[in-house]
Amino acid sequence: FLGCYREGDTDSSNPLWKLLCHNNLVNARSTDVKLDCMEERTLNTMISENLCLLPRLTRTLSNVIYHKTRGNPLFVGRLMHSLNKEGLLRPSLSQRRWVWNMEEIQSRRLPEDVAIFLAESLGKLNKNVQWALFILSCFGASSESAFVKNHSLDRSIVENLEIAVAEGFVDKIDDRYRFAHDRVQEAAYNTVPAHERCRIHFNYGLELSSLLIGEEEASASLLFTAVNQLNLGGPPAVHDKGQGITASRLNLRAGKKAMEMSD
Image 1: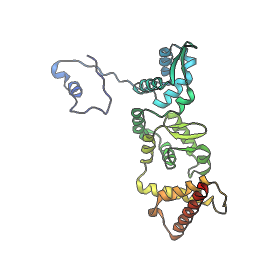
Image 2: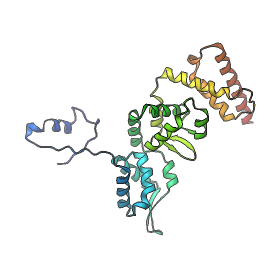
Image 3: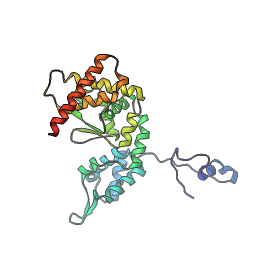
């Protein structure tokens, strides 16, 4: 017979695992075949054959699917099925071939099971890339690349975020970095202990607030971002009275700005 299982999803109570561990007792032979993730070229061949199109025509589609699934066969099938169900990958009677909406597919959120897989794989990334993902997570689900370049504490963050994009953890759409899924953002954020996160948020808030000194007409977005970072840091991150006064003044300024914008 033929069976399959995921590594890490079986334990000593699983009937299949018991059989594999004790097959010598029943004079049975078994062969383990490990299915690794597909390379991008292999994935493109599979997609071109399934869609009955030349490989050069499916290369852009397979590139996006590869970076969203990392070539995992199970998730490739899951993603393509969901794309077809949502009408983003469909047969066209007029063109007599399969067609797809590349822009919509690139911006589409990952299915839940794929996101869980990516979140669990995050720990295998280079430490510098993990750090870059953590910094991005401090600002929410997405952030403009120009903001990251101009205001990051770590100037190598952009280079490492590009690696994260290539690995499928982050999407770069319209010059904006966006986590592939909320679960990936959550996993990246939790790579740093809570007390350290408070300090880092507050430091970001102070750095951004220094850009607002003497700039009464500064960008509202920059002001709100600075205040949000200070507040995420909270009282535990305040080291002296001066920092507390700075945070209070900026919160007041942000409150007044919000009232002006609501009028």
